[in-house]
Image (cartoon, rainbow, N blue to C red; front, side):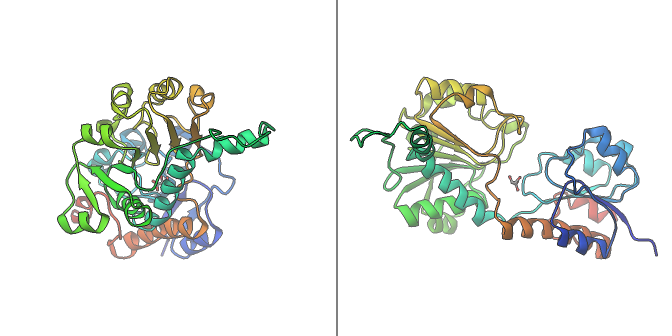
Length: 328
Ligand code: DGY
């Protein structure tokens, strides 16, 4: 029997390709070219499945040109590259890769918070530039983490991981805002109190963004929200570009509306707003919050599991639009 054909859209671990090749006729992209939408379509037209990296846009236009496509499996937890409504209408399943990256990403979010609030990157640049000639009482003073108020916008699995690190590890007071309030047991586990978005902005010493990107969350943090924050506050974005208005943030950092920011994600990445590159009080990292080898391997294997499960028994592990499965 012919194996189903799948496209692995970007470079990935050879052992994951080997696993997939046992089940599928696989086309790979180990040179890691970043294709335009029409280059993607050209390769996807005869495929039943795609292993995606979270960067390949799957929308009505792509779907209409790829009628054999049945499943798009992201190896990322974020899936803003999928137009899920269009996929559901076309009977195409989407899957993502939740859970396996939670703790690794929370570690990084907390690390970025510490690097930003304690000005570690600025200090490193200062030293490398030969500017360190003497110890001064006010050299690169930052703000404390321990005992401060940690605000979290978006209290899913990663937000909860950051809350636990802050409350249990650093004695922080944790407040959060989320679409829906957590149940009482989870609030106790995270030692987190629910507040309005306005209260979160006004009271946080350090605000970490962990909400998914959508049309509703576009520029959720813009000039007005930044103006509500404390001048001493730190803002951390490990969620998605576009949640923060990067141009407004650069202005706020330059004017010291807030003290500092740590950003792992950017609007239009891998491009970075040029004004962010010229302000000193921001730590910039290239979307690496989940980047440890065991975690990236677990993410890739979960995407592979979803593809294999879909084609063997139609029971993928982490479906995003399971309604598609009921009509099979
Ligand atoms: C995710 O899994 O969504 C991470 O942001 C990596 O893209």
